[in-house]
Image 1: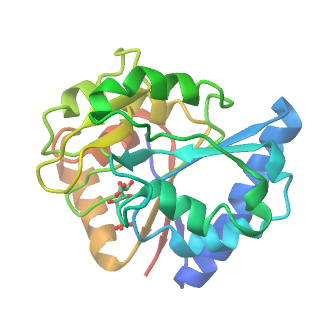
Image 2: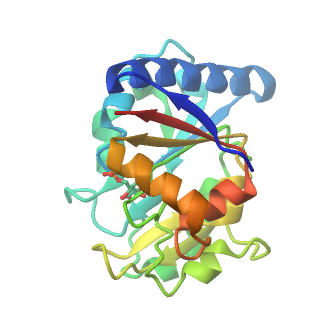
Length: 230
Ligand SMILES: O=C(O)[C@H](O)[C@@H](O)[C@H](O)[C@H](O)COP(=O)(O)O
């Protein structure tokens, strides 16, 4: 599928306009279905977007928020995406949103997949807005090229929404949405900043397979909008 590209002169312009676009999609979901669902990624890139989005003037009480992926660590950990979202997005107006936990008490994420899928099933699906990041290895969500679980995570007929993955090039076991769950979303965004990641993406789209660069699997299977700034 062709990648729709929105290129901005600055990260500030990107985050301001992107937050407004997300708010509009969520308001549409609320108007059409009574509630809207927002799935966000962790990492550093989304932080200024979360701040801008937290001020959006929509009925956040009718928005369910959860994660595209989660490191399998306690919320008290600096590596917790749950903590990142609660501290940076679910504040200001967005504090009224309902957060659906991806993390649970099981020591092994593999033992928590079914219960995680059941929690996410309470959200409006297909997800109204899903925001992906990308690592320089081409991973997205926690679908890592290095992990043994990649093939299962990319299997379009798996019937699975979540999968536990164990990357070898990044810390922590993770819970991740699967490729079928990601590409079923109504509005899929890839949020990147910097020249290096744009080069990684262009090289991946031009030369890599889906297993070499999992972001290619998403772009091949769905309409994705790239939001990029220097
Ligand atoms: O849990 C995570 O780490 C993310 O979901 C992951 O997929 C992230 O989007 C990329 O690693 C990019 O992270 P940065 O934005 O920090 O570069």
